[in-house]
Amino acid sequence: MSPVRILLADDHQLVRAGIRSLVEGLESMSVVAEADNGREAVALAKAHKPDLVIMDITMKEMNGIEAMAQILSQSPAPRVLILSMHSTEEFVRRAMKAGAHGYLVKDSAPLELPLAIKAVMRGEIYLSSRVSRHVVSGLMRGPGGERPESSIEALTARQREILQLVAEGKSTKEIAFALGVSVKTVETHRADLMLRLGIRDVAGLVVYAIRNGLIDIDYERG
Image 1 (cartoon, one colour):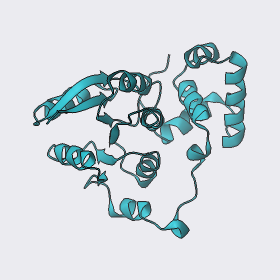
Image 2 (cartoon, one colour):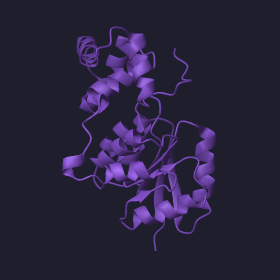
Image 3 (tube, one colour):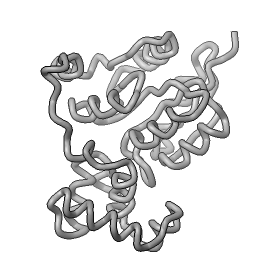
Image 4 (cartoon, one colour):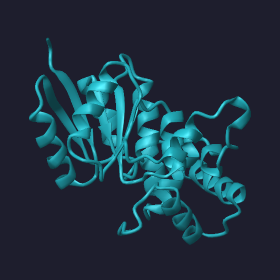
């Protein structure tokens, strides 16, 4: 049987090293590439066509949920297992809604990782045992009991992408260059963001991005 080809995406090198060590200790598992931000993860997934992507949510350049959406649009699409420090219902719901096949929190016991990988590769949905009962019940609500869309989900993918880059301290010109759009387009999106979110300055956008897991609270700007 061919080994399961895995792409790791996490912006902490030590975390990736730990995951790689666990994965490569398993039978028929192989790490084919590593990414330290969401944008790189999208490119590496396209280049290596892994069977599985193990991905963090809060990463530089592009967060894991936005990166996952782009990766899942590729053909053939890999399966995606989220491995995150966030265990609240909001993050789990957003990840699963975006197409994640499993969700594991980082303080889980190491033995949960192979269980999650095997379940996801069997076509099952895996939720970490550390994900609380209310999270599971929230995900399993019927159509009449679904929660309203959060403000972050109401933004377009491009708006969320620009929001993250603004919060990371990128200039308008840097954002325009990174996304291949005009400075005017970036300025328009930023103005629309502030209007939709009711935020009047960049500092407010940074706080909003931190609260929604787009950047780490200890992220060093500049």
